[in-house]
Amino acid sequence: MAKAAKKASRRKAARQAGKSRRKSAGNGAQAKDFCAAARDALKRGDPEVISDKALQQVLTAAVKIYAAKVERRGHDVAPFAQGTVTATETVVTACGLIRAADLNMFDVAIWFHRPPGIE
Image 1: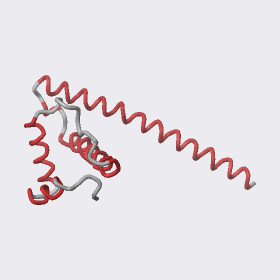
Image 2: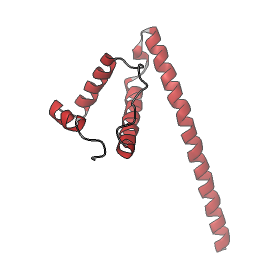
Image 3: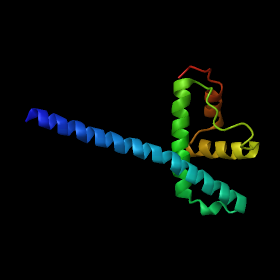
């Protein structure tokens, strides 16, 4: 009986792992869908078609994964490809992130000048 229970447990774990892999694979498609919708909205000059909630979810996930990668690998993780975001877009977004985290420029200056590798 114990062998049968172990076998059933292994089958269940394998099914769960398969579901997790399929869910992860779908995340790439969802990201592409969001990016395509965002590009289309900007092209039409109507950014309001992307809900604030959707934007917050995507931005939150992006910020968290970016921070995790920087903490793990150092400051060599580019947040976006060169030439894809303007200086204005960068500063507007950075200011929004700074305000959302309730930081001030002194806080930011300390982090900005932090040498790579110091956590």
